[in-house]
Image (tube, rainbow, N blue to C red; front, side, top):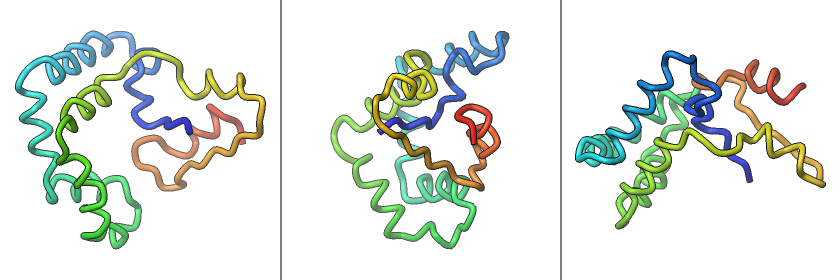
Length: 128
């Protein structure tokens, strides 16, 4: 499974002048108490619901059950560190660099109404 989420934070996808600012923000979140505070704001039923309602085209699909399903692992010990590492990842290979190395068929699933990484971006990147 290759997850292309947050790929726009990858250094190669950022405008040149934005790179140092993004890096500074990521480092600040990861290395200071600000990141733990930010996680505390997001890792709540209200915070998770807000993010999901941005991501889901059909907001009726954002149920209490879904919110809890996503939130509960975020309440486990160590979750804040995983979250901060995840939002701070800006290097390493991108899915479009790894897929050509695979020796098996690949199916790419992309939401038609994805508000953060539009379908047209997926088509340009992966063809189709």
